[in-house]
Image (cartoon, rainbow, N blue to C red; front, side, top):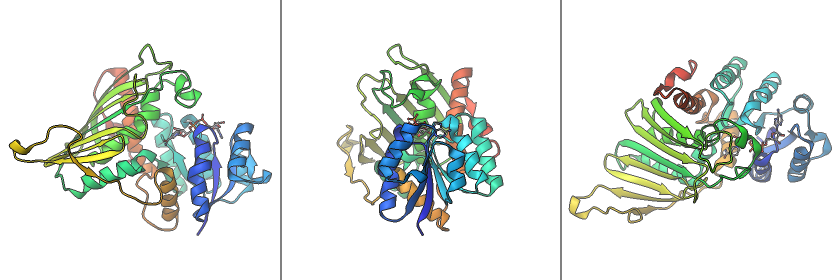
Length: 354
Ligand SMILES: NC(=O)c1ccc[n+]([C@@H]2O[C@H](COP(=O)([O-])OP(=O)(O)OC[C@H]3O[C@@H](n4cnc5c(N)ncnc54)[C@H](O)[C@@H]3O)[C@@H](O)[C@H]2O)c1
């Protein structure tokens, strides 16, 4: 049955929600948008234009939007520090929540939100969009099939040239303390954990802010991880690289397994399987190419559909808030590691949501 949605936040990414993720699901009857809300009048006007909504469906007062419209769920696309305020309003109106990552801008707020959702008996999931992109989904299927044997370690590289002021879309990323970890690595560490196939036990992180990066906080970092199943992970991330070799959606991910190696690089996947030494091919680019999976919806477009299926009694989403606490723990434990110079026990951060 078509689900009624209140969409909150029509900033730089919220516009893409309107023009692409929501629209695609409106066209096939998965959802209808009954209202939009943003504290900024110009943002509301943009959302109204993109979705073709009447004035009565457009609000600058979030509480008013929820008070005036019946909805099955809301989509939250405001900066992380404001997620909780919007979620509080949704819960007060008995509305389920599909929220942008990360859950919140601190570990305390993330755990608080998960508790409030549980106590209210509502459903909430988080859009870890990149994990649900076409290339990462294909890689996950290869790894989960077991064709390369057990995973030993996962290496992920993200390198984007967004070093100039406002290059990373919007002001808050240039003024916040930890833009790489909170706005970038939340996706990449989540992907590494997903491929590792277990919760992270211990991590060590170091981040820095190169002189050429026009940011208040750290744009570059390296995180090493040990997972509960013994798999290791290594992440290198840069939002201020000189050449953007592995920009957003074109990350490099290598999964080293017992019987082979899978490499995802700029949306192309190749696998190498173990051969007698005399036959081994040693160079990237010479592996067996694997075509990407095909399906109608990817990224948040797919996640909206998954959320609707879940509301209709279908399978629970992979990114329900209680499980997604793990993604928050990865970034806030990394921040603690950077500040303290110590390795951090990640499960100490999850506030009982294990
Ligand atoms: N999954 C992805 O790939 C991806 C990409 C970009 C952004 N995001 C996430 O989307 C969210 C929004 O990011 P953005 O880049 O669009 O930010 P933005 O700053 O460009 O836009 C945020 C919008 O929220 C509005 N807003 C702020 N506080 C509000 C409140 N309390 N109630 C209603 N509206 C409010 C602002 O007026 C603005 O229009 C963040 O959580 C970010 O991490 C995810």
